[in-house]
Length: 189
Image (tube, rainbow, N blue to C red; front, side, top):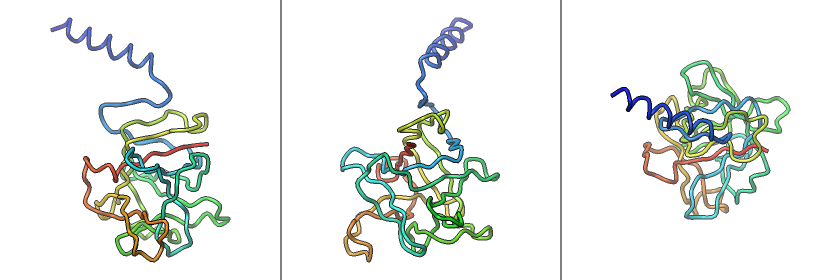
């Protein structure tokens, strides 16, 4: 039995020694974004990768072809619960536009400390260790879940929605770990 623990410890130590800045973990991780800007990219391989596009207050977040070199959001941790964040739109002088929920879709709203629909749980399969020095993929296999509603962001095709084209939007639906359209990546530049 002691040999089993020793061999398992040796294997874990060699894995950590060879780990890249983007570490894979068996359990979910909660990224420490460190205040840097990020691109939120749909983490899938069936279609051309798409990333969230910032829109005006009140509009649903749309997607466009991922460029990976344009950061449009900043993810800021909140104190409770652990792994919870506010996702802010960059390029806003007042720093007061955030991702929220409206009509079942993710949208941009003015920040409000009393609006529970502006807090998100982000848990990932892999998380980078230093966003300020990581340029490129920082976190992957991530779910973005409404802390208030318990529903997950999912990319959906919506050709009849008022914001088409593009025809992909982020909607809140029941979380499903097997759903590839509920998995996101965060990229830094």
